Image (cartoon, rainbow, N blue to C red; front, side, top):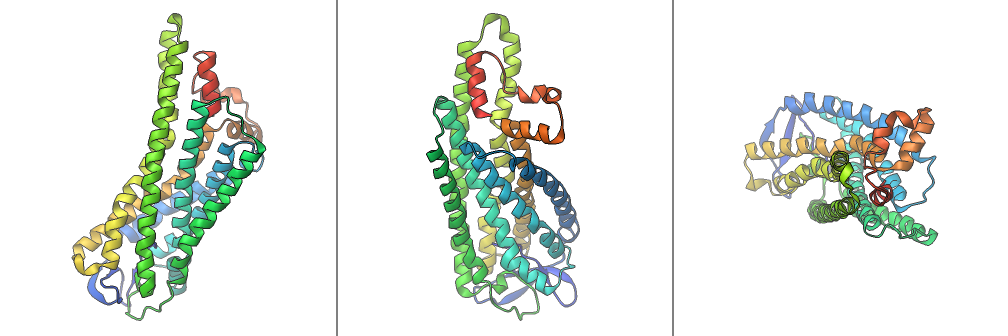
Length: 357
């Protein structure tokens, strides 16, 4: 897993590895899209993400880990901050101003951390969906200290497992590229290429498995809230209730929408692009270029997740909003619509939604 940036002795280009023994072909094209547009877009992401996640981390330091939801959100904040810190190296590499040493660091370390944190976020979003579904279906369930300890241990296990999965990508990217073109794939050993493909397939399973979980959970949440709304709706509040129901549905599907927009396009592009790296003889030069641009474009949307996650914290986490208002000395009354955006149709519906928030 890496950002593949290439440099020649005459001009900065993009090149692709054609065989497993690292032989190269003449496929190299300059790409203004990647050398100009990409650094600008990632620079914008870096500024926004650093600001928003810096604020989010400051707020979460003030919130005790008293629920599964908070524990999962704190793990996502850590993952987003680490991902954000990889953006400057991506910017330098894509703009072709990075030294060879920096480019090697991007291939061996920075890009691995980027993908590691991406899948950390994906897994914890899946766990958040399960937790929100459980709270909706069984709102009276009590979160004990023992259960919280188990969730903390689960979080450590997830981090350790994904680090172990990605670590060989650092260790096995140890060759010296003497081809005259700088290529991340060219730095991988023979075993590194094999492991690269294995990791991509495992990550695909992680993503699509979590996507199925997220969809199922939010369908169940939506149905339960809708049933609760129908049970408690009174005739004189029909018009008001219809307006509230729209807000309910919008918030329910916020996580699902972010998940799909940020991660689905990239995972459609990932497998064919990887094949163009490791089985280059099967692809023409033009196909390799198109796959590379497709992968890089969708990768930016995956990076966008680091900016959108703080919005999820704000809209879906009541403790986060309360702590944020206190930190900024803002009266919650000015954001009353946001605080009650999941409705006060009747007591039963409100209680279920408060469990979600």
